[in-house]
Length: 119
Image (cartoon, rainbow, N blue to C red; front, side, top):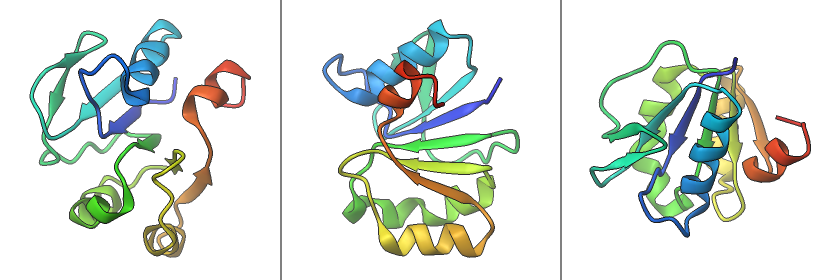
């Protein structure tokens, strides 16, 4: 199963990152929650962007582009196979950096991808 890092994880039940975390866990995907505030989502603690995980298949991004700059090195050093930019998180600068590093980029809604079998 594709281990997924949720960048911008939130305990707010109205946020898409919250919904995706729970949907991934229900479907059996292992997740890592990364966010600014402490808490837990889908039984997994939210951690700061400090520990580099070397087993991530996908990073799904829920951080707006203005705040993504702080995560560039973290994302690149994690070396995922792909990064999904959810609506509102699209970032041409980061997309180019990722593609130059050989990382697949997708501009799509992770929740829709999960619901339609495209994940």
